[in-house]
Length: 302
Image (cartoon, rainbow, N blue to C red; front, side, top):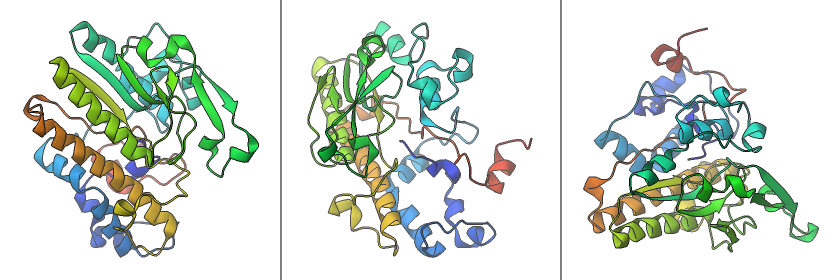
């Protein structure tokens, strides 16, 4: 999940308690009451909260960086990104060194079907502007982003790829979606399209009768998030702020996408033999205050 700082709150239900929040400094960015913000936050992740309750929550696990490129590089390599010269998104977009072994390569070597769906952001890229009359407020609409061949997902351990190579993509009508190496049209809301692709991967693995590794990297709720989500997500939220409603609706679209994938795994008889890991690619907001309870729980003061 591309949370762009959603992880600023530790993933603990107690964080969404009004009495707890009364003792914290809360930046009123969206001009909504804290009670409405808490209600929306709780409502946006029912499936993920259920996974947490039924599974294991890592209270001493960390992402490697506050922005997505280095953090994703760490997820793929299992190494601190600074060890191979990736300190920023700019470094990531110069391509993760080809000498680094990626996680899916290990799965491939053991007979797994491997697929990546969604955000890649680990390639040396080039941006080709779209015509000016097609450009929009969403800067992700203004370029088609291509990956250099050596850094294509299929050359880093994935049998199949559908998604985008840049830091983000538009929620509707993206010009930068690829299936393997071919551009493909956007179909409706991007979270739903990625969920459909993920379900296709699950079904394909069943047909092939192979174990599988699926790396699903949703775009949501990455900014800019100006456009409302489809009604089945958007209508759940009424905080008094359109911006906040758009944000929570995009989070909810991910939650409901995960729900659909879990249902498909159960339908296919794959659920009991599947390990499901959910994480954000971002740490806390770089220029935001560090929540006190995070310091007390996890991070030693420095």
